[in-house]
Length: 269
Image 1 (cartoon, rainbow, N blue to C red):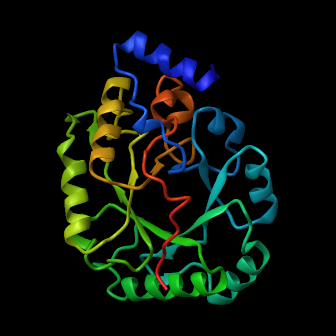
Image 2 (spheres, rainbow, N blue to C red):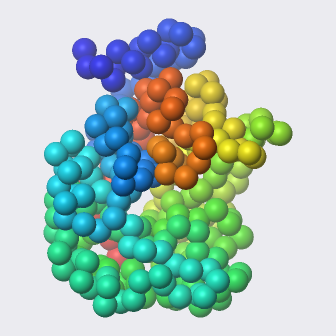
């Protein structure tokens, strides 16, 4: 029995939770986590994740591949103040020339939380950047992550995948699970065809780290919503209280979610 399976069974016994079904343990789906360059990638892999965010460097991709991980490559992002990308197209061309077709790349993250209200040109800029990336490394996925459900329609299918940012648990209100369902509905109503979950796995002055029973319910809601991948926030990147400090939560991310995207790279032309 693997260490991850033992941890899962222990958590089930300690917290009185049912062990996920065989369906939830099917291999293949993107089960990623936001991480920093200093993150302990071996610990991330041991926790059951199979992908991490990282910067566009061959050495970083080689390092995660040696630990059985794949990469969601950050490409510098978009500035909601200047309404422009932080990195020019030539920078993208140089970086992708070095890493294109690397076996560890599963997706390119074009931006995290672009804002069309402040920058009306953002959707078309995001779409153009996605098109450039896909022309340089054909067959790979592009993704943005976003929290403003009112703007999901503006960005509809500007990238292959939308990571739906929805954090239900706060110190003041507890866990308002309905937020996840509402945000997924808004993404689908806005025209998005492919969705990843961005499950809450952090806490700060406002948000609270979910407890094991709460996290299990959160992941179950995401799974029933039909997302095909996951990019949990976060391992240790920005928040004062994050997943690396909560090993009691790790078993619930092991081999989740159930829907395969590694084997289903049907992407936009």
